[in-house]
Length: 299
Image (cartoon, rainbow, N blue to C red):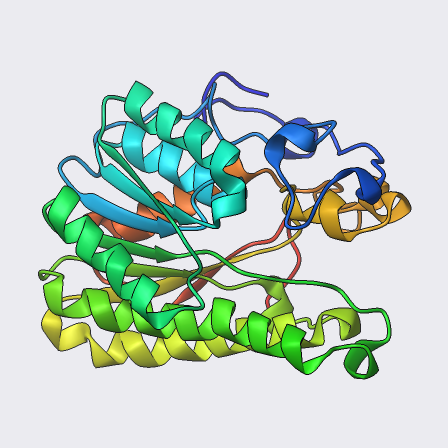
């Protein structure tokens, strides 16, 4: 791994592949501290240059994985950050808060379940009260649970949870935040390669990710006159606690190996895409989806 995100290095060799780990050891949705090989969130490598100085960000699912990497990057770029997370992820959330504060920025932690519309409203109100406003909304939190039997194994309860977490919450948070966002603000949604290459065992999850792509394109046009840009990042196979928590160990060992990069991506490799969309450098971009997939096509 290079010293920072600007160092030149062979991308296939930048990070080692995750090792096999028994999923029985990790409770869903997974905790960073329970992983044999923890993800890289940029703790030791992300170097900020002030691109988001003075901005205020909300990041759902900001306790671990991609959300933590984005929180670290935003703080080091000069933003104050509110993270939302499930109460059972308190340990990870505390670690993320420490990383934000270590960067010299204000951190606000809001536990709760974003399947509740009222809680989504509380997240936005807390950002307004504690941070003084909202310039960046990152709809990142998601739920997935693979079912090898496909539709025959997906219960109504699971389908409802996936829809509420991945789609409804994005709608509720965007609707609550938009009236308070000034021109130049941004909404960034986490889509997935599953929106374009859906796996049969992730039928419900892939459906929501395709919905996120459509929502992003439509909302980008909807809010353009208000000066609010809306874009999405579509990750490929990224090493997060969710992987060993939901996959058998033999699949964990080969996770990401089928990409041209021949390995899984790390959350730290996603963060620059979220910084770009949050900054004024992407001022002429809205309604777009950026794939960070290790070379797998979004098609």
